[in-house]
Length: 331
Picture 1 (cartoon, rainbow, N blue to C red):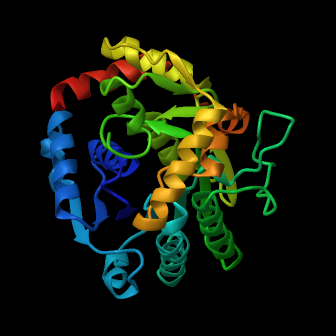
Picture 2 (tube, one colour; picture 1 turned 120 degrees about the vertical axis):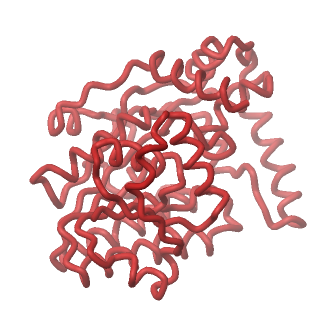
């Protein structure tokens, strides 16, 4: 039996689809019935409803150990996709609870149940930036850098996985870039598509690395099925500027692309307004660390993962065309 945590997220739902299409039995951990329903709808879009019977749905929470004990029964392999993505300092406690403590719980149960292998989905946010780009797997966490609360807790999650390997667990960590794919348009990378659909006029001046969710899932499965362990891999396809990415999305969707740069002065002003609002709402939408990252072009090397798994990235236009087809159907 294969266990997938975070089964209703973007990566989780695509992983479920891929595994069940290979006739593998999967146990899917989920928290929300509405999110579970979204996965069922996604399977319908993929014309894969006949595969849903291969999923053993178990409602639970990685932060609640009692709810997890039964989940691990008869499980051999674990894909840990569950995480909270937020850059809001006011959510630091929740981020710590889910990303660090939740991962510690998963690791402990893997050890207790003699799980053969854990594949943990981390983030490129845990890698240290250096003047000498591109960033590689050797750019270890820099505690003195201005790290976001998300990066801080994802690094903490990685530390729990490495701790598990010291106690006998076989594990691989993947550090994906911005994951793009069908579904979950209200959160994470889906906001790039909403940015275009809502006709936003401005674009951030920086850039990062992206990967097709289907590519990431394929790499996760290859990592699981390989003899490799106690390794981590940057999982990215292309380094892109945010402007180029938004222009490509706009072209694919037949919409107008943003034409104005979101410059430093405007970002500082928005950060100030948001900080004032945060005093009353206890929520932040943009932070100083966040707007700095929107202005920075960061390059990542995918040489290690290409060599390890013979990875050939899906062309970006193919990925975006596939996503556009889904958007046009669900809107």
